[in-house]
Amino acid sequence: MSFGIGVSGAGMGPRGAMESFAEGNGQRGQVYNPRVVRRMLVYLRPYTKMMALAFVAMLADSALTLLAPYLLKVTVDTYIAQGDQAGLVHISLWTAGTFSGIYLANRTQQYLLSLVGQRMLANIRRDLFYHLQELSLRYHDTHIVGVTVSRVMNDVATINDLLSQGIITLLGDVFVLAGIIVVMLTMNLQLALLTFTVLPLMLLVTLWFSRRARVAFRETRTSVAKVVGGLAEDIAGVRVIQAFGQEDTSQENFSAVNAVNRQANISAMSLSFIFLPAIEFLGILATAIVLWFGGRAVGTGTVTLGVLVAFLAYVTRFFNPVQELSRMFTTLQTAMAGGEQVVKLLDTVPDVLDQPEAIELTDVVGGVKFEHVSFRYRPELPEVLHDVCLEIQPGQTVALVGPTGAGKTSLGNLIARFYDVTAGAVLIDGIDVRTVKQRQLHRQIGLVPQDAFLFSGTIADNIRFGCPAATAEAVERAAKLANAHEFITAKPEGYETRIQEGASNLSVGQRQLVCIARAILTDPRILILDEATSNVDSLTESLIQDALRKLLQARTAVVIAHRLSTIRNADLICVVQDGQIVEQGKHQALLARAGVYAALYQRQFAE
Image (cartoon, rainbow, N blue to C red; front, top):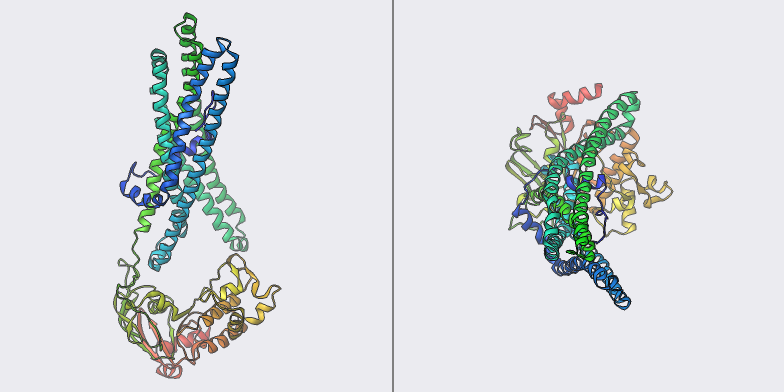
């Protein structure tokens, strides 16, 4: 809080006012949700001492803010009117000390609140991130990444605004407002009541604006989201746009959504240009009332000049808490809406959970067995696997082939327990994977996906991702086994080459080789290779095949393949169709059977 005569509050420009009333994506949640408040206060509890100090600083700030106009009254009536120079020096020092105290108390309060707020933000986001990592893939399959990011960033920020800044600000505003009313009524009852005649009008205007501002600003947030979404999509697909010569069409589409966003902002800002002059007018009206009636009272001697000066100061200060309390209503509503989403996310129970008596999985041999497994991704969706029975011996390489959507990748996902089976069981060395701790299970399984994902950082960082403590020598050894060493050392920075956005500085094949090196370094007992050689040229395919031969030695491997030429030497080939294994055997035996596999093989080589 601060004190001044004729000075508007901070952040009260047109856009500042607009955003203050309508912040938070225009969400309309409950005005007060005790469940959300209880959950979020847990994050505030560790900083009780800091909040108590901030509260004390707020009280000091408020008290000194109330004292400053009274000192002006004393200065005018006692020392200036009587020409007391010594007393004037004395009261001037007191006034300077008061304003210095206001500054120090305000800065202390803001520092403590900012410190608490940032720590709360970090803690809530930390817990959300940890929880998101614990959630199963079914959650991430059904939720848009951008919305999830918004929960972690934007919704948490709205909660922080309320719990750190909002509560103390609310108490401070109530304290100052009540104090001003009491002081003004005490100093001069008639003049105070005349000043308060504008208050009902101010409350009506503020309420009118706050309701419409939420609607108006929701439209601006919605329209800007479409602008950002369209822009991101067009930038990501710029190669396709240029390839098909659709630059003009893309420009027209972007211009259309941009125009909607422009109009939404103009409408919202026009609304604020009505509100702010109205508030200023009411403030001027209140000042005019004080000047008119107060000036006449000074002329008749019923009111001193000091009282009039103090009243003018109090009137100026009186309007700020009223405006802030109106904004606080919207902040509370926005925080409740954001808090409901955060609590909903934190309360989301993972579909795949460790059982209370889950065991460690050690000394894995590598046997895998599907016992009458059926599976669907969500209850409302049809089954993608139906009564699958399959036994994979330790050290055996089993290839899963079949048309797209047959259920091959689903089988691999169930081995790693990314999802739980709907019926039946998946066993590793005779142990149901549902009875094993997930992290222990995942340490025994290596995954080389079709879409080779690399994290930001260096090539070495990505290779040692599954084994952060690996030495540079171990990383290089894994890269050599994966046939990645040659292309890595050909780069100017070698293993310290930083991965660019989307790994754009590596070819598809190079990314896949890095992923294979990553799997080699973790030394898993079971490997799942999901279309590891798709979308690469023949030379890179040969390098990948050679790397995979080294990787598969003495390991159980499940190879999901589209190119049948890459799995001819597999110990067992399973043909998956419509969620069932319809054929299994070795390459030559399946060809001789002249069934589904033979048809797939002939069709592929005919192409």
